[in-house]
Amino acid sequence: MEEASRGGKGLRASAPEFTLQSTKKQSDILYGSSSSSRDGSRAEADTDVASSDVISPLRNPNYSVAPNCSSLTGSSLVELRKQSVGSPSRQTRNKTFFQENLSERSHITKDLFEADHSVQNVRNRVDFLFRSPQMNTSLPTTINQYHSLCQEKSSGVPVFLNYRSLSSLDGKVYLLRRVLGAVPFDSQFVVKCVERWKKVRHPSIVPLCEVFSTFAFTQGAANELVFVYPFYDKAQVFRKVYIPDENEENNLLFPLPEKVIWTIFIQLISSLDALHSAEMVAGESLSSSGILVVGTHRVRLNKCGIAESLSTDSVGSNSYSQYSTSFAFDIERKKQDDIWRLMHLLFLLTLRCQTSIIKNGVLQIGVNDALNVLQNIGFYSHDTLNILSFLVDHYNRSLPISVTQICSIIAPRIIYDYGHVWLHADILEAQLDSRLNSSRLFQLISLFGFVMDWDDGSTISQWSETEDKYILRLFYDYMFHPYDNKKKRFFDISHVIECLNRVDVGSEELMLLASKDSKSLLVVSYADIRCSLVKVLSEHGISL
Image (cartoon, rainbow, N blue to C red; front, top):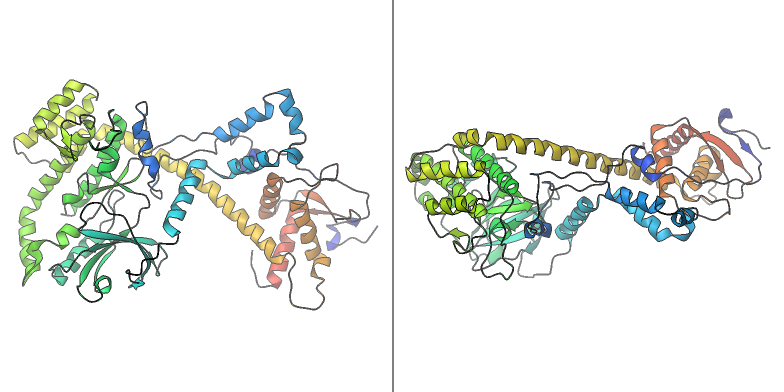
């Protein structure tokens, strides 16, 4: 028997052969024996992002949704359990699971690490944002800090051209909205407008980041304005998602679920409250073509600040003071216009299956007739009819309405939606925890990769044959190169995860390490492995 090493904590001895095979369930290792509800998908997040999935729920007449919320389901793990215990023959095959069915093993590993819906959305977003743009020699290489410009598609005769770009300052993706042609503007007035809008930060408003003028697109022919906004991948215009188009073959011929309508309405009324409190208005941003759908029933006011910056009142000498006076005089009227626009949108959502009275996203009948049609349909509850009746009554009598008045009427709906927002936040936090755990383990395994087979340039490198480095070598083989009783290699990702987790926390649990020829054995704890890793990393100037 060879001498002991590491001060008695480890024992190296001759022995015949041994086997290592992890039998702990993967789900127990990752999330504990009771954490069977890890897998799931979020309804939406603003991180998250709009995709083609936005439309799919709306084409199912049986679809029902809780606002901004989705329940966590352990579908993949439940299915895995069914497969594992479904029949005696299945149980027999499980004995040789690793050797005979590696493809299925890969599928199980995927389920344990990924919430399919959320992860797929992230992958699609990354692919969409950072794929190589098509070469367009007519576009400038860089504009200020923005580079890698890629023109987005536009329909009809464009007043603006949109470009996706990357910022060299923060690495984020931005949308450059270029106003075509040289338009008359007062630079002082534009700066004042931009400063006002840059202070607006609301979850239902696309923030305006900055505005600048440039000759880059026209090679010096015209000085054009460019408005910069955050870029939302695969976002769609409100009208395209929710309002039917008579030119499409597959019209949306079923009513929108009431919960969806209230979710959208509460987001919009919340954005109006933020703007009106700051003595600002939404204007044309609050329209079926001005609202952006950035996720499943997740809406934001878009193109904010453009109309105000390009107002004809802003052109001329001493224009800012003139415009400020007129704007302050009309601010209350403009606030009322926002309320009527919101009422119009609510009618479009509730009557969207009545294609005969909605053309090109515009209501073709008066609000009184629209209210009568909605009452005769009888699809929506008293809450929806009540708020519409309140709005129509004040509209007919030209009575002013404030956002506060509307919020007092719909308070129960706001409370309901508010609760689901926090439930959705809990779901996202749970998914974030799982992502952080994966990130932590990745960092740890990367550190092992740095020290394994380290070549310091010397002629003879024997670093892995002494002391701490030898222990790390054996532990590395213990994690990634296990053998079964028949001396066959098998792949067990749960074993790797278990080892990394225990090293990370410095567990005192002992394990048996062996050399590849099984002639030397070493009994150490996971805490010893952590100490050895810290020591080796410190020799190379790396900290754990």
